[in-house]
Image 1 (spheres, rainbow, N blue to C red):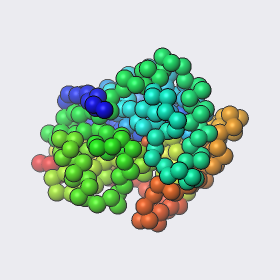
Image 2: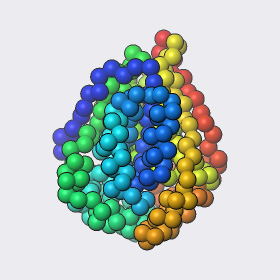
Image 3: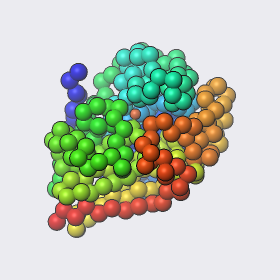
Image 4: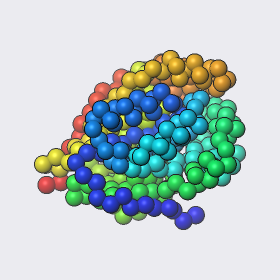
Length: 284
Ligand SMILES: [Fe+2]
């Protein structure tokens, strides 16, 4: 299928990136407030997709994001599945895995909640975006440039990331999907995942994560930052809607109900408290 790629042109000074709102209205509202508190223009706020997933408010989250004026709302595999009336979320979970079983319940909630006009709007969202920032060319994809549900982690070999960056035709790739944030600078290339705001980072705390990217004199600075929000409200709505308890509990415990998608190396980090991080890509 041809990819729908949009060019955001030249972005300046500061960008905010976030992924995976996952139908979590309270986290999405908190992100919006943070963006405005930071004074970042809404045109410089980029979402890496999966707006609709585990939590209870797909309609409200989409309405908020559609009216936000954010520079990019990328199509995740969840949006693609909903737009195509697919039978599942398209995350690529193995049949019979815990993720696969759990996804059935939230996915049917989302399918039933969204009207045809919304699904058509989801279908028209971009699969990839490109922009210039700090003298570098960036591509934004959901999972990977080749496949929108590819799981690319910090521990994924550089050779895989280099191939993806080359395929994207950029100096750097920003992605989402895997739910875990990281930045890697290797040689002339850079890979960045801002993490997700709809679920914790599997680190044993309820915080969720976004990133701020600044153009600074020596290059480009990536800051991974936590976001706090009232997860009790989100939990209550999920339980009232009969959504999977595993995801409702995860909002508080900070631990995913299943780690099926993680590599062995990523599983080692399960429950290890994440800390804010900064990475500088020296480009000057
Ligand atoms: Fe995804």
